Image 1 (cartoon, rainbow, N blue to C red):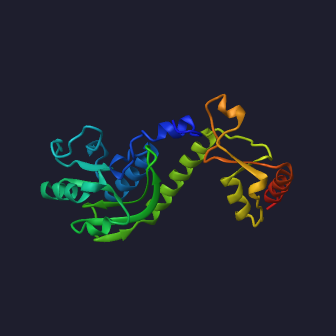
Image 2: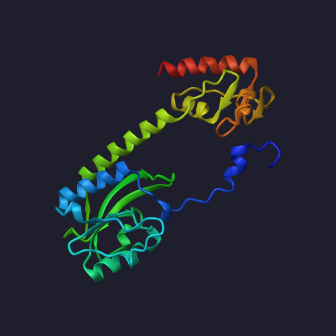
Image 3: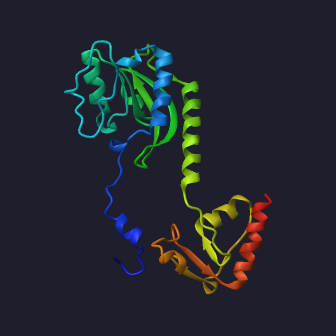
Length: 235
């Protein structure tokens, strides 16, 4: 470990980088998409296939007559996947990246631009491609609204689960300054009145740290920060 580096920062360097090919769909998001697609296109829910899973091979997967693939495929080979299904007459409704989905010309693009955070933490602006729709490209306001609602529920549930620290006035972090900026509060601290820190003593004993690091500030600056907090709470 480097000097001054927390354990969390040290171990994070060895975690695999997240890519759009590792986007495991939250069940709430998938059920939302499946429900909308079923209502829109009327396929048999008993014949829905999900061939994209760790270790799976969509090319060797058996697709029963009349089945529909509703799944989140590797985006890097999406064009190849679409071609594979089109050539074999397999119906599909697939997750796709919004910014590049229009380049897949052999099917309909259902563009909603939903900001989905997948189970592995990767955040992707998401739309869909399908051969179930007669359009070449379309919007889907109802699907977008349902996805937004599902995403917001997930966000709130995650926020409830995250531990919340009540820092003393002598601690200054980036989220605090961002909050002051949001509410029009001018707060600043000079180099002479602060000292960089990654964690409080109480946190170090538990292997915790200040997320993103922060500063310990002087008594005078702490009094000003307390006033800034009161002002922000009133706005």
